[in-house]
Image (cartoon, rainbow, N blue to C red; front, side, top):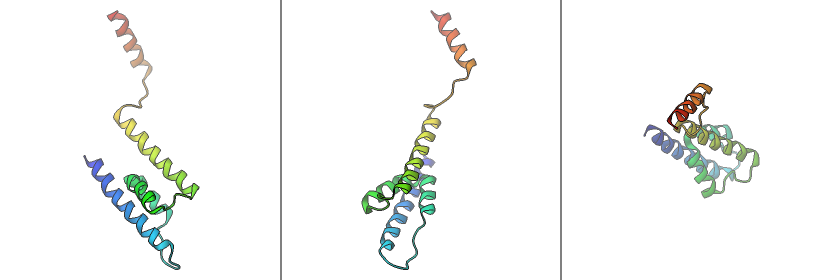
Amino acid sequence: MVALAVYGVMSAVAFFLYWSDKRRAGRRGEWRTSEAMLHGVELLGGWPGALIAQRAFRHKLQKTSYMIVFWAIVALHAAGWLWWSGAIHAQTPQKHTVERQAAAAAA
């Protein structure tokens, strides 16, 4: 539950930062949101909001180097959730041997 709340809050922050940066992009001399800040918020769970904002504002989509880092962050989150759920785990040799012995004994 807490993780979903973090994703929601950080997504809202990311969406706002993208909106603000896009709005300022056309104005000369205005302070812009750094890419490091955007990626930091994405890394902290704001990548869903960033993805929506990228599409809604057509912002950062053409910058390949930026998008490579963005998708790496998304992949990192996906891998983390898969690991957390148990979908990704390394079986130790002992566990594998015990399971094989139990299956053989049952047969």
